[in-house]
Length: 589
Image 1 (tube, helix red, strand yellow):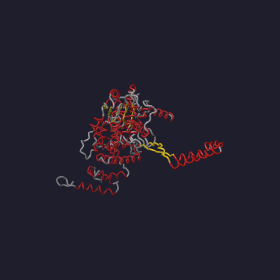
Image 2 (cartoon, one colour):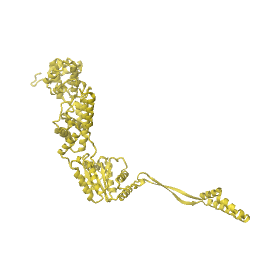
Image 3 (tube, one colour):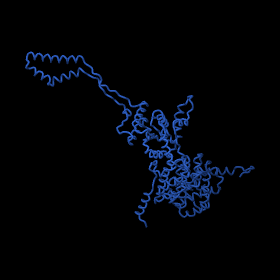
Image 4 (cartoon, rainbow, N blue to C red):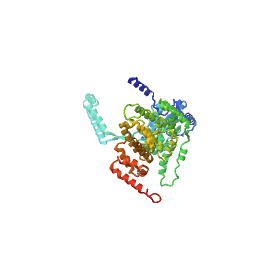
């Protein structure tokens, strides 16, 4: 018998092999992973960039997740031998920042990092903050203080002349005292400082605000680049707000188109059209201007454009199968699982990766619960051996919220959901063979203690819904010797009734078949079951309208004898009304 340590070692080995998929775009050195013709698109872009005049604007169009960033990474690698510097500006990343200033700083940083711009180069300080400059004004003379200084000097000179006439031998001592005496010299300097003054002037220059100032600064950056061309890639433009997207398009066309510059804008062109229409059509309200045409705008804006082609179904199927195998989960190596995923995400390889990671996370949780010895888990294999349906269920929950709400409220399988959503109906039609009889384990990834205690509970529920009385009798025959299992079965049937309240046919089948089977085996459930059935029979919107389809002896002997007294009168009155209605021809029933 295997000990716990050996089991743990096996579990650790299995966990170590499991692989979640990276959601990052492929780097240029991962060419073996690139599919769908992306290498050819990158090569075409390289030819355009090498041969086009400047300024030039290129559009790379494709939906989110279609591989635009992977193509850009490959293009960067292909341009290395051309010496054309390439910089990338992610608009979405900097959406909250000042657009023009952030753009200039990011471009300079990348150019320095790639050694296309000197490390000594600095942008104008005014790009970030206002700049203050301080300088001295012209000298001004204080005439009264200047005259006082001249008078003081004259007095010193007078005493010098007087000493020279009267005591010549003391003249040297006098001059020495005047020239070296700190008190006299300090007083003279002080008098001179008071007589001559200058004004200190501080001038503040505002930070850049005028678009032309940013244009001039960008032009200065371009001049410092030694190459003949600069490629600026604008990414994630379609993921920003309407106003930000339009702002950067306007900025590129109005202020940033400089000699040497090539702009490559990778975006979803349909999303960009919505951005443009949101801003310009709103601005045209109550005017007589020609209606705005987003297609015409893009045609004039871009000098050239490339559209990433739609994906071929077989390519996506193979791609998805390869990704599923990378997880190392044996149950994922399935064409059915790949088909369900590919059908839901046929336009978006990146979403396929993300969904496989979601599927893997739910699979691991289901596997842990199936292998657990604790209560409130699911029987082994009920989910992990049905990965294709798990994928279908998770796709419905992720992409079709209103339809999933019906599933959650009434425990319907997806194919039983009523919906007018064409995409949802197309998905169900394509995956109609991927189904289960019991949705509850997939909703909760567990079963109740009562369900787990009943052998074949799924088959019993199916027999109830299908009104397969003979099969139900056989299943209950195996349980009737165990009172605890019969009590738990009653609770499960109560839950099944609640889940099917909005499905009258299923509800009628559940109540009829359960009452007949109980009568056959001379069994009964707790009071709650019979009260619930009586409530349904008293409600015209549920089973009240179907009362005549029930055998009167079944209702009187099985329900009325056991339900709450307050519910009996309504059911009896309904039967009286049924029996008293005249038949065709005027006779009473």
